Image (tube, rainbow, N blue to C red; front, side, top):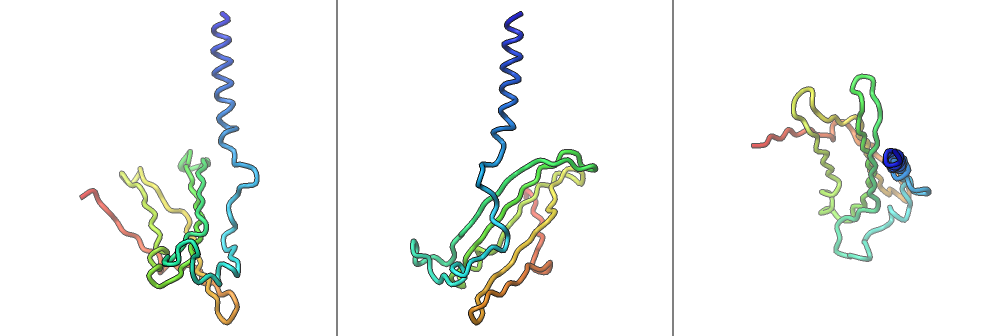
Length: 144
């Protein structure tokens, strides 16, 4: 009988640790979107690699589950990226691809929200331009 209690205790103890391990580290959170410094805007070259055409200043993501009335349990993924383009050859770094899985009309992933902005220094002032729907493209791929 004591083995059952030990097994039950270990089982409960193990599963009580899982939520604790899944919590965010204190002090670590996403950078607020649009949080751009003048130093970032004024940067014209990256000192660690002066030949770089672009540099990723920030890239963080997090996954979490939520419950949707229509879909049930939903896996969400948020990603924030901050890229400094230093040369025209670095424009390709601003092309972001989001692959989505689709097995059938019922089994598919969906992109629910996409936000982006471009920040430039014009006459000493920061000017921002939001990503427009016309700048977003959908490309269908097959296994062939």
